[in-house]
Amino acid sequence: MDAKTVSKTIRRLQTAEGYLELNLPDRALTELSSIQDQGPFEAAIALLQGEALKTQKRYDEALVPLKRAATMIPSPLNKRAWRSISECYHSSGRDELAEIADLVVKAEEIPAQDQVKTVVRVAVVPLPMLSQALREFFAESGTETTQE
View (cartoon, rainbow, N blue to C red):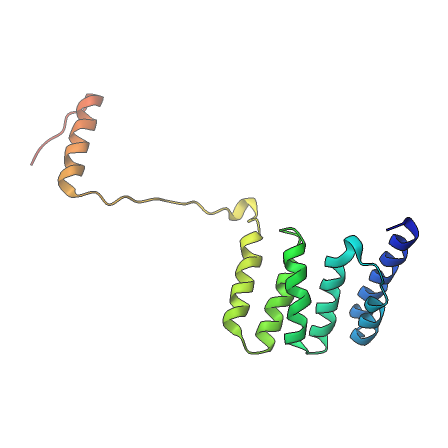
């Protein structure tokens, strides 16, 4: 792609995005279909096409470009595509698939520092082994133990 084509493609993508924000999916799709050489913008075009189709309530058709965008856009930048996939599944009554798409989005989220969860691992040890291990531990540390 030459610089002129890149510039023209970027303008068309911005225009299509604007049409989507104005809830004009027909115009967005027209703008996107006028892009001759998708080149490195294929994923962005697929995302916007999918979102335009979703806005038109053409959920099954929207899933095709949205899935393509979700696989082409690297993680975690593909959250927008996965959210749209989830919305399509939910709106078409496939809640189980929507939940799976939501799991992908949530798996990519990094918890805030104050929300970091602590993992506690618990081992199940038979009581006689635990008693013996505790006796050995206290014996090594020089602490007396009382046996009952």
